[in-house]
Every structure is written in C-alpha cells, then in structure tokens.
Length: 278
Image 1: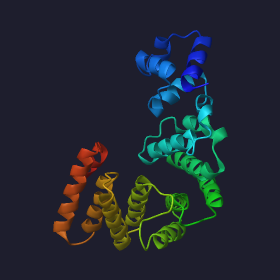
Image 2 (image 1 turned 120 degrees about the vertical axis):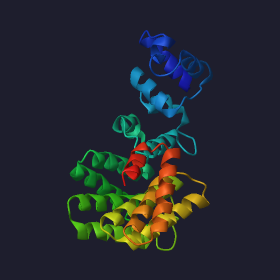
Image 3 (image 1 turned 45 degrees about the horizontal axis):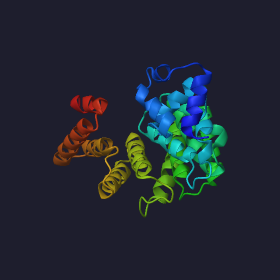
Image 4 (image 1 turned 90 degrees about the horizontal axis):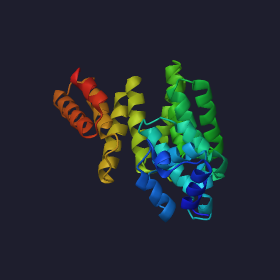
C-alpha cells in the first residue's frame, strides 16, 4: 500500500468525498493528486489530513521505513524548525503522530523539542526533566547540538528562577565548547545561529557584554559565510544593545539600523516596534 491508497481507503471508510476531506485544509485537487499519484503535500497539510482521518504519519509512511533517511526524521526536523522559529501551534499533537516510531538516535531531538514546548508555557519542572533526558541520551557529548541546546535552556530556567551562578555555569559550558569555532557535529545552520542568538541574549541579561558581543558577531559571520538569513535581525539587535551599554554611538546607530531593516525583511514586526521605541 502507498500513501494514496491509504488516504483513499480511509476516506471512503468514513464516507467522505474528496471535497469533504479537503474542506478548510487544502483544495480538492491536492487530495486527488495524493490518491492518484501518491503526491505528498506540505507537511502541515499532511498532518491535518491525518488528524481528520484519524491516521498517524506512521500509517501513511509505513512503506518508507526502509529508506536510508526515514520519513519520521524529516518530519521531526520540520517540527524542530517550527519550534526554533517560534511556531509552536499543535507541536505536541504533531509529535504524538510519530512518537511510537521515533528511532533511538532521534530520541534526544524529540525530548529537546518537548522541553522547549514546556519551557515556553512556563512549566520549568517538566521542561528540565526533558532536557535532563536529552543529556542522558547524548551522554553530555559537547559535540552534539542537543547537548548544547539543553545547556542553553537549563541556563535559561535557572536564570528565570534567579539562580544566576547556575545559569552562568551552563553558559560557560557552551562558550567553552564553541571557543574554537561554531561547527558542531550534527548541527544544522538554523540550530547554530539560534544558539548564537540565544547565548548572546543570555549574556546581555547578566551584563557580560564582551561575551555577548563575541558570540553575536560569530553568529553573524556564520550566517553570512553560509548565506543564511535566520535571526539576522536579533543578532544585530544583540550588538546594538552591547554598544548601547558603551560609548560608541556610531556602532550603536549602525547595529540599530541593521536590526531594524533586517526585522523588516524578516517580517519581525515585534522587534521593529521595540527598536522604534528605543
């Protein structure tokens, strides 16, 4: 059985027309192409179709389990990208669709995602539980991006609980690991730039401006060298705040303007408003 057959059979068993299934999710032609030609739509659309049909992604991708890079890994990467970019809608529902088929090598990534979700709703106890699981799964290997990301969020948890020495300890572990370069064995460009942006922000909060400057500048260089646009607005804003704390008015204006125009290009209107009120 292929994707189209699974969708077709389940739709018919529920007495739904193609239009019924597509309603509010996509157009009827998308359903037709899926059923006739095994076309895979965008992941968010596929997830919603599966939810409407009470199918898991494992059901529709069972035939691909022998691929060298299983479909579940692509899905998990897609979910993580949404999380890092702040798109947190229905993340736990999406994880639930594939959780029983996640391979051991992907458990750290899955627990990292769940930890970030719990962090963002203020459940620091459960968030820390997931990050501790990540560190057990990675064996605290500091050449593993999920080790460093877990250090980052554990530091943020301690900071929000006003345990500043503990927060500084985790930031120090990250900085030590990244001292030579920003290359991490299993990291994507998005993950590296996210880490640089967030570590820079953390150092700003504890007024370690030299450290904030260094990691933010390195994040910008990494983005430019790799032709990536992720978080250019926030990295420049970090540097604006660094120079705002000093006397170099020219650099302050430079990074403020760069942050504003990058935020405009990246549709980060919240940051634009923040800059306008500075």
